[in-house]
Structures are given as structure tokens and as C-alpha cells.
Image: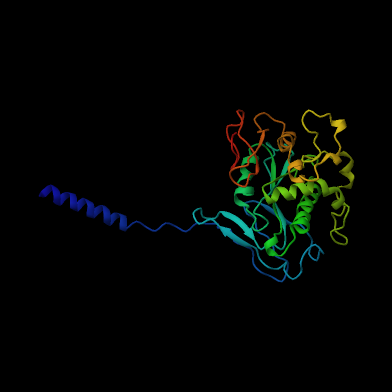
Length: 310
């Protein structure tokens, strides 16, 4: 009997101790959209330390003046505090730049273009998660926040223009960001890959256009056009075919997306030709949207989020 009473007393004391535990503090630094003002909406960084640059100047004909002041809408994770899964309501598109330490910097930069069926922008698993991964390889990353069909924009024009303007801005600021203008690439997922394909073949024509009068970056890439050799996933000779015989008109007009992304692994390897960098790619027809991913290799002990070994 005495032993049973002692056990009951111990249980009661334990329950009392648990009941007296202080509540957990609320999560800190949870991201939230910027405030609504009379000026165009100011996009906020998705990750700490991000440098956010709007793609177009105020008053640009590329923007919808009746929408540009509206704030973005974040879809936050229900289980991971402070994690932005996706964004909608993008009316003032932007890029978010994350630079690497000088001791690691290879000069390469990769513009990350998230997917979402042009209905949402899945910046969590298809942009933000890749920033620390590429940091370890000395690659600067830029998250593109482009406009969406669900918000009244045409992916074939508005979203494509956003991707093209992102390349133009990164080139324009390349010196300030210690980026090699000849090592700027793009990596797209699902709907984002469609924008990468378009940017791969339309940039030179777009770069001749003026975004708005007196815009300082109009034609910013003209001086570099002759020496351009980007890794923007374009104009790479197919394996086993002499480069001299491969011309831009060899693109498959019926499959522009597949053709433009055919040599993603080669392009990324050209960006960062260093030991250990995952220079292989696989096309998955199963899994999450059958997207192209960098896959784990024997030389790469850690693969990027969402990748799969084959």
C-alpha cells in the first residue's frame, strides 16, 4: 500500500511540474508582406539578407498602374514557422539577390525561377531552399518573383518579360555584385522552366527594347553581346554533334521547352567547373511535376532539395 501511495504521489508531482512549465515563445522574424502606400508596392525579402530590386521603374508601361500598389499574398507553412511556401498577388515583380562570401565566390550567378502552373509561385521548395545549397559551391543566387496568370497576367508576355528583365538587371549590376556577366544562368521548375526556355531564345531581341524613357539599363548588355557565352541553357551542341554544324535553327519548334533545357547539366558545369559540383542532370517523368533536377552523383555527397538519384 505504501509503495502504491508513493508512486501516486510521484505521478502527481510530475503532472504538477508539467502543468507549471512556461509557454513556448512565439516564432520570431516571421516574414510578412510590405505595407500598402501611395507608392508602388515594395517587395520584401523571402530570406534574411536578400537584396530586393524591382524589375521595372515606377511608371513603366510594363506595369499595371491600377494594380502595382497592391501587396503580395504569402502562403506560409502550417508546420514550419516563418517558411513561405508560395506567393500570389505579384504586381510589382522583382529579383531577390543572395551573394556568396568573397572567399567562395566563383563569379557565377543563377537566377531561380519557381513553378506553380502560373497560378502560384512556389518560392519555398523551388527557390529559397536552393540558396544555401549553391552558396556552398560559390554560386550567387537570384530569386525571380514574376507575375502570374491567376492575377490577370499573360505568362507568354508578362511573365516572359519578367524573366528577360531579370537577366538584364543582373547583367547591369554584375560589377557591383562581383558577378561575371558571362556566367549568368537560369534554373526553372515546371512553369518556371517555360520562362527559362523563352528567355534563352528571346533575350537579345528584348534587350534592344526600352523599358521606359531614360531608363538607365536600356540596352545595358549591348557592349557584352559579342562576347556572350552565358549558361542560360541555350545554344549548346547536342552530344556527339560537331559545334560547327549546330545552328540556332536546329531547335525543335515543336518542343522548345525540352530542347532549351536539354543541356542543363553541361550549362551548370560550365558555370562552376570545380570538383564536387553536381554536373549531371536527369529528367523525371514521375514525382513532382516531372521536372529536371540536378541529381546526386558519387562526387556530390549532398544533393539539392527535391533532387533524385537515378
